[in-house]
Image 1 (cartoon, rainbow, N blue to C red):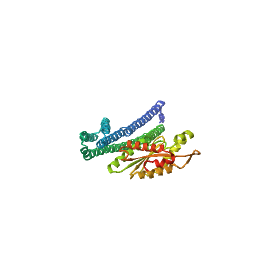
Image 2 (cartoon, rainbow, N blue to C red):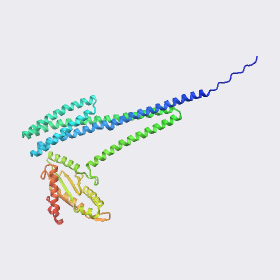
Image 3 (cartoon, one colour):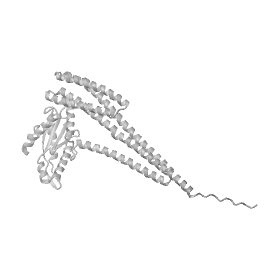
Length: 413
């Protein structure tokens, strides 16, 4: 029986190859689109979480801090009203008291407008009741002051206003801690989001062909760059905030405390001395012939002289003292815990001995000398402005004498 020929094996047609290749290509494109969509969604979630950390929560922390500072100023001004004998001075403190009250109210309104959770709303309502109680007692104190019953007003301040204010401050501090913890939680969630994006992207990349792997690698590389950029931006924001804080409170040339920070430290020292019956002293240091140094040798030499004076003032004072540059060639030294004017003389002599040494600047021998005035709390003034004026006036009395009579003209010798 003749053998029939076997049918030939069917070979794929070009159309079939195209269909298989096209299907694989569509699947590849779908994998790539899924990869890109997942990456974009995860990055968007990461950006949102970081925005919450950098923006929303930090804004609430700033508002709480501003409210706490304003509430402290309000109580402080009320306390000063109870201590002041001059009615004009009391009126000035009363204006500051009202202004601080406005800041407390506006800060709390802004905090509420940012949106509060149920737990935050309960804390906010508890604070509202405490604020109303504080305002009611403060109004009683003002009524007592208006009727010239200052001893009763001081007693009410000590027994009720200050303790309630401290309770309010603790509540604000608790809120600030809660938001800081929320920041940490948001940071952890952002890190988890980043990790999920990383592993899902890796999984999609493995499921794709070489092109999909290349795209996955490129996407992961972009994610890393984006995360690094975000971290760098956050670090730069923190450095900028620290630099702004330093610039706001310190002299950029010498690194000493500026006038604003010096006034703040002096105010705290006066409050402490008033409470515990101590004394606070100021030395007002003004360089002699500094304009001649600038005119003859140039401002670069003058800046070097100011920097050297700052170094010598710091090295010739105690660690507990505070040295500040008030402006130009004027410096001030806050002497805390002094016993009397003899301490001033010892400090002034030590400073003059440190300043009198000649120093070469850019090859030039420059003589450094200064006139020093002083003021003592409470004898020469009961607030920071009065003490600064008294020390400045004493310095000009010293500067008006001839060089050989300087020490003999010091009013504290």
